[in-house]
Image 1 (tube, rainbow, N blue to C red):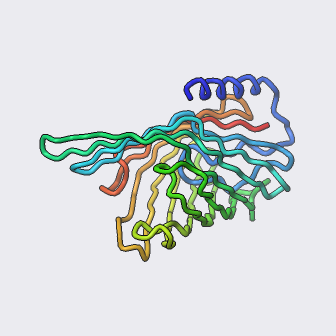
Image 2 (cartoon, one colour):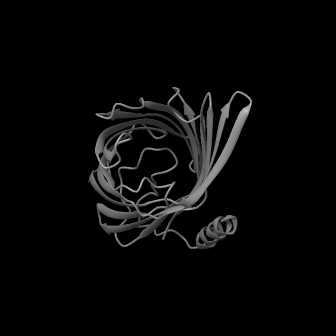
Length: 270
């Protein structure tokens, strides 16, 4: 998988030698934080957005879980001036679990493929001009992944990102997402899930954007678990008009959140 990741990055770097089309909108991605862009890919153009490395650690007093994955590409195709379709392909995932009780400890590992996700995004306002952009995007996750990695259930939902350009350097984004997910108590039943995102971004230079984000996920009608809250830090580097690298870190705001998530990624428009 290391070779795949390096090869993927090399292809993107090589393709960046081609000049950007002056008629295209400014490059916009759903990375690096959890919230998404309200704008869509230009009609007739492709865009690839992918993790290059994703590592996380979660724990409680008796249990530690470490998860790692590499290339996780989302392929986007601009269908019309204000719609695109998106396909998130599976990635290879490694999970290492460690249980401790007193002087006793044991570990086990799981490896496999993640699920496929299909998304359609519609821009309602601000795709080409204006200081406000609004989008809506329904999605469905298909249970194509490996046992132990996938919950083997179809899940679906919809999210709505809104972005305000505050001035030449600052922008504010908010997003609401509603999901129908497999219940923790009974995977054959669905539970309602709501996610909220608030992100503040600062263009430090023409090519470097820094951002902070508050994220919260709330479970309903399930009776297990608690809300997850994180404080997310991210930086994006626009190397070329159509090529971006990014790094992000998600920090816990409560015990239900992972201890740490670190992600490196890349995006390229064709």
